[in-house]
Structure formats: structure tokens, C-alpha cells
Image (tube, rainbow, N blue to C red; front, top):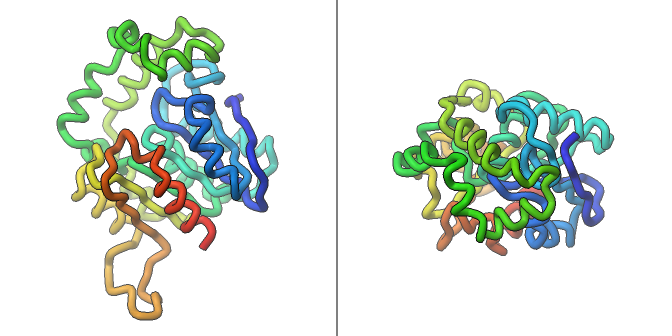
Length: 250
């Protein structure tokens, strides 16, 4: 079972899914910001934080395991926010278990592998055990080492994330039928191309026509691009919390 923590109070729970190599402890400041106004279920995804690393990582499998967790918590339909690595899990949850999701926020994540800039895809090829020693001084490793069931598994986690990120996928056909209302959030200097972001928004039904003075031409999808941010600091931005809360509360 995935490690999870519950913070704050609210009628509708919000499931928060971290980025790659992060965990609930490292992301505690972001969790606290959301928990000021809502009930937050923060999850350590497989191999991250306090959740053991077992088997290969796949977005589809993680979505199924997350569905099991939500079923055990009996939270009904929850809002789901996933950032980068966690965004892939959030999207798969929306596809595979739509009845569990009231609204979905996918941040800094592509719908297909070609959405990443070529330089980023090239970098994924070097994500593996060889980086473990270099990362030991970093907050990512220091936090992992202090809470993981097996701190020695860090090189294996890097290997499995690298393998997952190099695995080609294209979820366009499934996401075109996505049931829960969704918001896409990106940085204006993201690791994902602006062309891909626009295609993703259109895929969800957005950007097809004038929204009109009364908003009647809007789709159920929303798009936000935050200025002055990159893929790597988007999640911690105060404006990110404000943008997500505005969509979920609407």
C-alpha cells in the first residue's frame, strides 16, 4: 500500500501526487499551502519516500494502486493533482478510474513522449544508477535516505525512473475521451514544448472556438501557463497553488 498522509479539512479531498524523486516530506511546504483550505491526501508514489520499490514502474500500474488506496480510504470522488511524474499517474487514474475523480489537474506533463524537448529526452537516457553518488549531497537524496524503507535502493529507483521515462507512449486517443474536467498547468519555460501544450489542450476540447461574452463557448478543460517559471520550480510557486485552487473551487 502506498504511504499517504492526510492534512487539513474539507468536503472534497484533494489527492496530491509529487514529481519524480520527491516525496511527502520534501514537498511538505506545498502540501501545507493547499491544506489551509482543503483536505489533502499526499501520497508517496512507489519507490519514493516511505513507499517500497517493488517491480517495474509504470503509470498504469501506479494508477491502479492509487485507486486501491482511495477505495480503502472511502473518500468518494476526489480532486486529483499530479505534477510531472505524478501528473502521469493522475492522467492514468482519470482514464482508468474516472469514477474516482471529480476534477483533475495535470501539471508539467505531456500526453506523449514526444512532448518533452529533445534535450530533455536525451537527458532521460543518462538517468540511472551512475547518478546516485553525485546526488548524495542533494536534498532529494538526503530526504530519501532519512525516510525510505531501504535507503540503499536509491540507485535502483534512478534506474527504474530512467527506464520509465524512456519508454515511448501516446495517450492521445484515451485522453480525448477523458471524463473528469481537467486543468493543464505549465511554466512558460517548461521542459515540454509549447506546441505540445497547445495540442494537449485541444485534445481535451479546449481552444476550439471563441468562449463568448458569457463563457458559453468554453470547454470543460482549462489551461494555465505561469510566467517566469520553469518545469523545475513551477510546483513551489505561490501562483501555482492559487491557480489550482481557483479551478477546483469553481
